[in-house]
Amino acid sequence: MKKMIVPLILCIVSAAASAQGLPPANGGAPTMAAAPATNERMARALSQLQTRFAQANTTHDGKLTREQAQAGMPRVAQHFDAIDTQHAGYVTLAQIEDFMRQQAAAGR
Image (cartoon, rainbow, N blue to C red; front, side, top):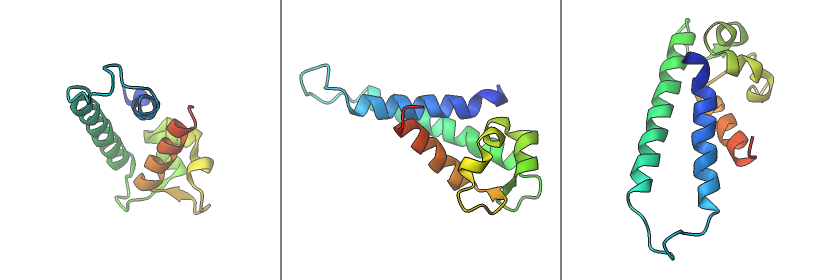
């Protein structure tokens, strides 16, 4: 389950981004049922990401080192260099979220 959080969030963000480019199925009338469900899933996924980040961040400093990522967030560890755009040797939760948004926007 833990290994599926980042891909799950990427899928949710990707699906939401893809849906924005589709024409409305009901002739342009807004659908209120789909938006809350998507928002709820996104909120749940982000909450799980925050929880996993907090568990992996054993020093509780808001910074995840490569070693901490390898131990607690292997998908983040796989993409560590791409996420650590400042080459600081650590990533923050905000950087991980930004990376996920970029990946979703790129369709990956």
